[in-house]
Length: 306
Image 1 (tube, rainbow, N blue to C red):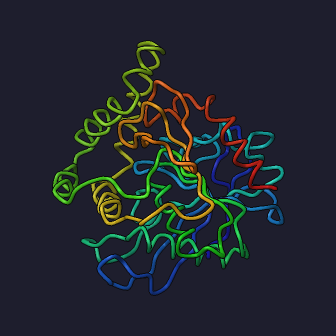
Image 2: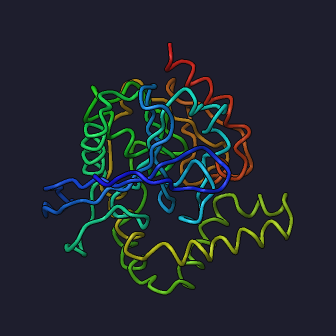
Image 3: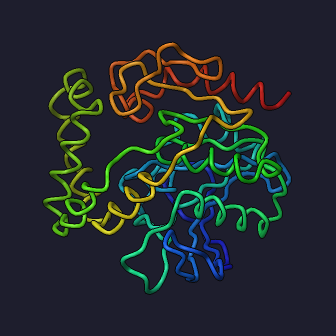
């Protein structure tokens, strides 16, 4: 495991980035590799620990703005000193999911991908090495919610409770999508792909409310993302999503949906372990308009501390 280093120098909490190496990590096809697992750590090491996991096209740089990722600081509205998840009173671990474009990967086996179950196993190894026998909670947004639930299902002794944000117990996608994702080798094509996805996921409504200048900034950020994210990461994570499925929601899991989310629509009838945030901004609402999410996240944290 490498020495931790400050990952963000802009305004925000003191976040330290490092990486761990997991030997004999098994990819979805059974190939054994040495996994490089990038992560960050923030907050007192003797405080209750929470795991925070990013979405499909996101990064683990969730807590503060920085130059390392286009979406850096995506959770900073509700995680940090004095915020809903207070890093003065809790430690927060974020992990770049294996196969993503921000540091977690392996040498060789370039036509293979990690499964969601494998990702959960790698995180379990990391937590053991960090001396965290049990998490107070695991919070996963979108794809990250798959991994948080899988961690709870496979390692119930490791996780007290799970909060899934805009996610489900089964992964999205179909095998025929993978060839198209592999073909997005050019950054301009990846930017077009991402723009189209976001327009269906809340960007259209957000831009109508925020105006042309805000949309122009978002489009610049999409182009920046396209220069950082790879076609390989897109197909690997989609393949993992296609293979993910749980028979039921793990015990002590709460799912928080966005009312207008077309990717993960709230089920009808709504089960007892779920609730809904009313928002215009679809799947991106947690990032575009985090305000309405603060109260339900605070309520979940308060319940987890009792």
